[in-house]
Image (cartoon, helix red, strand yellow):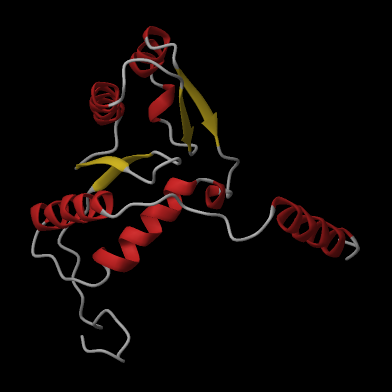
Length: 168
């Protein structure tokens, strides 16, 4: 890569495995607590929740915005949340992950770190993800919406009007 040239992926890119990044974004500060796991099961989610609980201050409400993953529906996860009543779950509607600011963070990790490199194995990918998290947290700032709530609502209204008048 050189200045003036766009970052790109070669045509012969080979994927050497995948990892899953669990992340919790503090919307007030922009800091992220995250960890990589090789699998996406309730066991890994519980490990992440335990780490999250250990790193957060012991008092105060914690609001978790989640997508429609099935990990939170497992009995052990439900029991964990029952034993930790300060945690409140909120779910994004299907196909509305853009509402979730941590999804914006995932997009940033992907464009700024993952797609700019080739990783020989999953361990190298996880190391790069951990390094990115550390770098991000050293310089973090909260995400700011660039559109007002009124502008977003007006856009949704226009879309609804346009699609409902088609006769379909």
